[in-house]
Amino acid sequence: MKKNTRKTRAKTRTRKKQKQENGQEGKDKKKKKKKKKKKKKKQKKKKKKKKKKKKKKKKKKKDNNNNKTKSRNKNKKKQEHEGQEQTQEKTTTIKKETGKKIFKQQEHQRKAVLKKKQKKNKKNIRKCNKRNKKYPQK
Image (cartoon, rainbow, N blue to C red; front, side, top):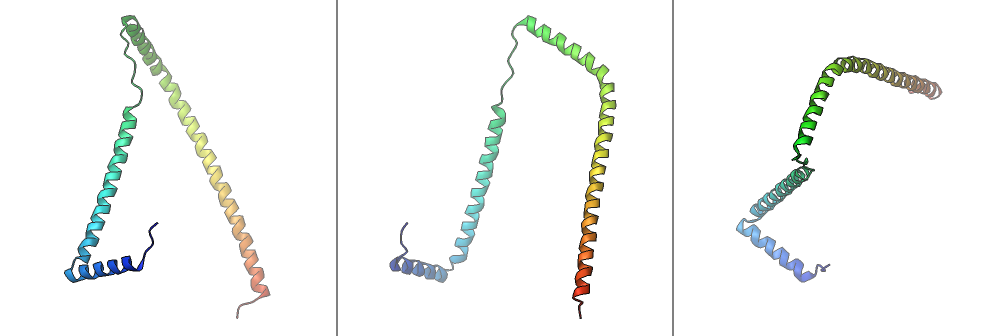
C-alpha cells in the first residue's frame, strides 16, 4: 500500500481548492453517484442473465424417433389419464381430511404457546408484586 505522504496530501488539497473555485465539486459528486447506479444496474442484469442461462441448461427431453416407443408412450399416457379421473374423487376426500388434521394440530400448538405466555406473565407479575412489597416506590 502506498503511504499517504505530505506531498500527495498537498496535491489533493490543491485539487479540491481548484474544483471549488471552478464550481466543479458538486458535479463530480453527482457523476460518482450516477456511475455507482450504473454499475449496480449492470451487476443486476448480469445476475439475471446467469439465472436465465442456468434455467436453459436444464436437460432436454430425448426425442423418441422409434415409432413403436412413441405409440407405447401414447397408450401409457391414455391409461394414466383414465386412471387419474377415477382417483381424483378419492384424492379430494383425502386432502380434506389431511387439511382438517393439520388445522387441528396448528390450533393445538397455538393454544400451547398461549398457555406458556400466560404462565410466564403470571410469574413476572408475582415477581413485580414481591419487589414492590420489599421496596415500595415513594
